[in-house]
Image (cartoon, rainbow, N blue to C red):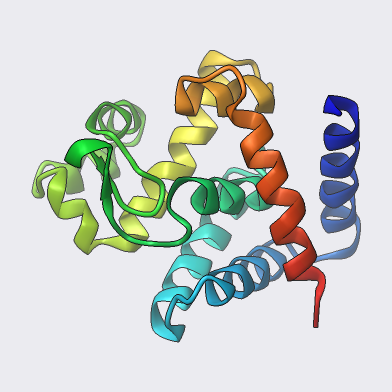
Length: 177
């Protein structure tokens, strides 16, 4: 099962790298999935643009996997979770935002002006922080092992299975015209 999931993931990523424009592919994929989950056009554009921008900066994090994380965490709903400790589309905890702020001064500057709870009002910032958090986990903690990075994200040994199952589902949606 694990090998089949990895093969599917590699196939998806290879197709995107060989045949597409990084920004456009990430934007279109994200927008289509956001719309499938009922996000209005304006918000879907903001999310898709932010994912595409972050993917251009950090292509080590496949946008398809990141979108699968959003679906796994919130189903594209901008909400509070984990008894109010997690915020937004990616269910960010304050420790995650603090970690990202250590490496990105522009994020630290913005976060110094708003409370963690107020992140709910800033979907692009949430996406930017979450994308960079996954990137930093991969780079600094798991040596670019996506399975370990996803498990670290959720503090679970099997979270990657949830994300990969979600990825297979949403990828079939994104492939439809």
